Length: 482
Image (cartoon, rainbow, N blue to C red; front, side):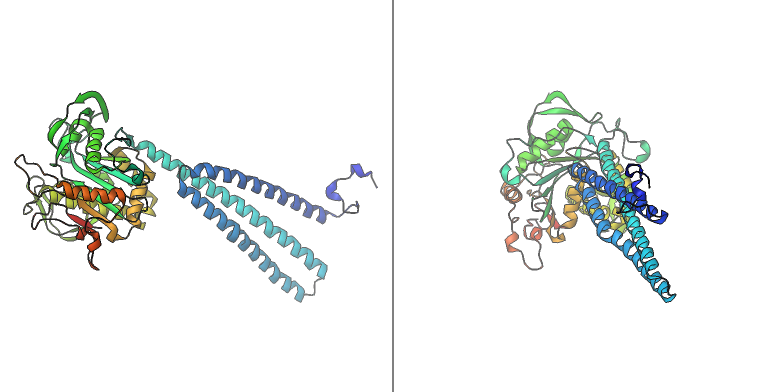
């Protein structure tokens, strides 16, 4: 026998005696499994650290990774081993029937068990790597889409106009403004050009309020001709999407849409915070020039159209009634029309269509038809990013709004119009009913029942109970549920 120091450990038994090649091969497999196990444990540790870092940026991919990893550990590997063992047991039974030596069966069973264990471990490692790569791609995609959003300066979360700020600490308030800037529009699109329609106006102003408990969503619209006290504002350059150093003096009596025309996002945010007392923490501006691309990205949106829409300016917008799926071009005119024949409410009729369309669009985007279709979802986010600009705006913020509206009971999604007198004054402006306006926004800030909600009957929604609309006007305090 050679000296002990000269012997290969793989060729030795516990009694330090040389062993056969089969045992050496089996021990090499044992060492390989040990290395795989060590590599697997190291990878899991690294993945845990990576998951903690990623969780701060996006919770959903991290949750997906954890669920998949747990499922692999508890289901995939044991299932693979069990199948291998079952196959071995069947083979063992067949061999026993042939009167094979018992020792040979035991050795063969041990080899199959080792092989099954090796397959299970390798399967876990490979699939864990694939899941890790997948979550990394999702995280990268979120950052890629976020980079496409045009960021502007709009928010002032420390404004003195914010009331009861502590109660609003975890609320989400999205100020959504539709800009009719023609910058970048072509003659073929039929919306006019920057030369024929210079500047930018905001014919659509809404606040989507999502309280901290996420138990309801209230969307309040403001008429474009609402009479306001406009403060001093820095001038807005819509072509460059920037606020300049030039200060435009305020006006005691002005229309709401002039706030955006003069001072852009910052000015309209000031005005809305002063009226509502809400802490606006998200600003979303949408250029209607790219609005139709969002609709086309999800292959149209189905709306419920009560009567034909024949506009004196835009023409025959939509003549079909009932549930109708409209394309991007139709949707653009649907939300813009304000001179519809037979509709004396003008801007209030348009507000109602805008609210119903937003609800229909969110429903379509959050449906399985879009969410489970990577191409449609990617096209929509790309189109949305191209057509929007904002402050504290990104994929996660918009998903917060969409998911909140999707998860809430439809009876708790209220689309409302800020309470007005319902009749334009001599200056052609709509005037707030201050007492009702204060009651509405007190309820939103304090997360208390909406005006009239305590008197809700079994078949009446909270929004309907608070409806103060004058007969036939469709204007003051109009409310509809989702």
